[in-house]
Image (cartoon, rainbow over all chains, first blue to last red):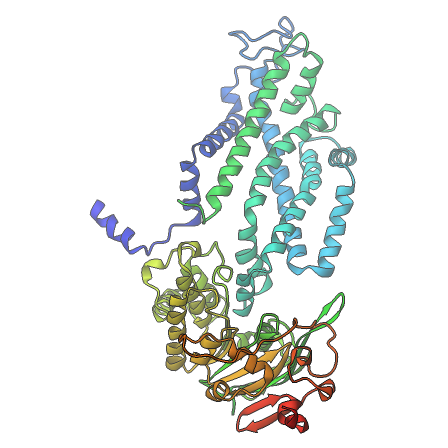
Length: 294
Length: 319
């Protein structure tokens, strides 16, 4: 068996796909792999919440409000006696969804816009970037508040509002890296071999602009989770009784003097996620760079 | 019929301070299978000349004929065909290859953009191209950063050859390489020229290289041709003061040879809105009053053109 595989590898004919190379390198980087695992764990916890959570997230126990951590309630209970651990497990469903989807939305719109602006330059650049200026002239959170106020509260609208808010950052970043890359000779070489603009952007320009964008994406997930918390706090994001990490943190703030556990556990959850995503993002950037030694 | 004919080609760039005359009235004919060397100092418009012929930038004026057909302004469909016939090899093999594409991907990319090859044929074609330029098959899946400069340049050459062009602009293809590798690449280019009947426009600032590879040489100064002649003739009998100064700068590997070194004073004047008259006059040791009126291209012997009133025209006695 081993003999059959060996010659194949030697000839080097079978090309290892980019995805596999990236994955292999990513797993070599212990820190990044740990980050990935932690994040994956939270995702799985959110998906299988009903199986894992010891209580329902709405289940109140008015005899045990604001109880500290105990064997019965590992992370304690909140002001109406709901199990905080259960709420955190369920909360991932909303927090992670908002964090990831809003970034997908922001990147999905921002990257193409930035690519077009950067690649074509001149009028197109002016037009698109002034449009982005309009968005960026309003402080991020204010814009998110205004949008969710207009659209109405709820998870979907929260994603929309946060996505639109962070879209200009992606557009700007993409544009900046593309301005560098479009002057490279390999872009001109592509043009001289009849590559159309779409092919040039997708095959030659964007792959070389991705590194900072990926890192930006992972960190933006973290920011989005925090901003979603802010929206929930003023009553525009996720509506109670749905558990959302940010919202839980904000409520806990009121009780921080006497009941530390209400703040610490949601805070710790957010912190762990943000940190995991950041190390994962850093590792991903390195793994995606073919110049790094493998 | 010449393979490529360029008539009074002009390329001006708009800058905030005025029009930059990058290429200003260049004319030449190039037969199939021959090489025209274009020499001149940095910023004299050599590269712009090559890129304008390839329609990587659009010409401001003049005419380009390719195989007898006027290709000065062409529509998309024609340009697509034309680009398969005309290719470019770049100077810097470090920036002319996409860092995220393996060797075979880089060479396959042009093939994917034409409908000429079926999927199965592409791999074969890539293999034969790699063999043609002297790359071993084991490098197929290497990334550019894993290769040395010479190998990278071979990848660039393979990519240019992918579409089977007839005419290639070599934009300083060896000036970024070590001297030992320069010779290898030059030999490769010459072998390819012979086997595939390629026509080259060879841009360089290295006179010893241009002498080795060119049939004719065109000397450029600030976007204009100052002298053009068969290669041998130019080195034996340079006429234009600028050419003389250039040639005197070549190092001779013999310490006993004492040559007169022509040193030029001053800097290249600005190519933005240049004054009428000879552009070299400000630095020319023989400049006189008549140089203010511009210069005429004169054929002083068959195929040897010089654009200098002092050495060709009425002012010759002042030499």
